[in-house]
Picture 1 (tube, helix red, strand yellow):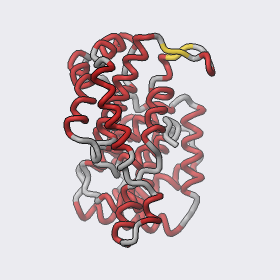
Picture 2 (tube, helix red, strand yellow):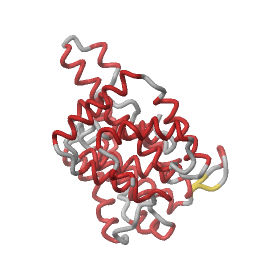
Picture 3 (cartoon, helix red, strand yellow):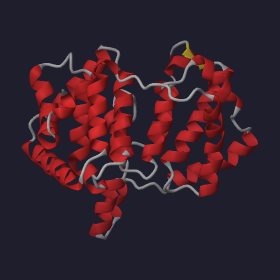
Picture 4 (cartoon, helix red, strand yellow):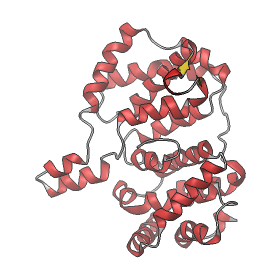
Length: 291
């Protein structure tokens, strides 16, 4: 369910989790890693005597994550609504597969069952998985477990060059302006965005097909990692915006995610698809960020 190609789905889950913005930050840093960084990361991986008990706690905590299956078991309507708003579509296992095989795909050699990482890359990836789990499960992990999982990554980040730019592709400025606009939303603007999202959802005018076209365009143009980075930055922008969690789940995320996906491949989209994904956001926030 989670992959870089389907980053809008991952972003939808992250924007509704307490540790979602921190998870997005870890993944963004991971997307900017280089071969020279791997030995540094590998050097901070704790030994198995330390990691073993932490991952036992992770497995137990993962069972406490809200799931859509729990909606059917919830007798209280308010609890059912809360589960629908917060329950992830994907799973921890799916996220770890995404980290190992998508985010760190460039560290693997060979194909199929013969695919392998060298020991340094394997240890670096393990450290990245520790940090990802620490933030993704923040709401259900004990503080001591979360800090233990994240400690190596935090220490390694101090040794890596700071301020590496995130690649947002040829339409970097438009994407950045939209994200900046969202970070500074007034409450009245957030309410307008919620209203537009609700209207767009009611109209059912091919949004899913348009997003699929934009995602396919990202794949064909080798901008999958670029599009994923843009979606992760959107998670962080939403986290500082005035849009309540319930409204993110109720349509605002889909509206904004589609617009971001369209901007990444704006030069490749047909006019109808671009209009379908961008027009609602322009209607809600005005056109200045697009110029």
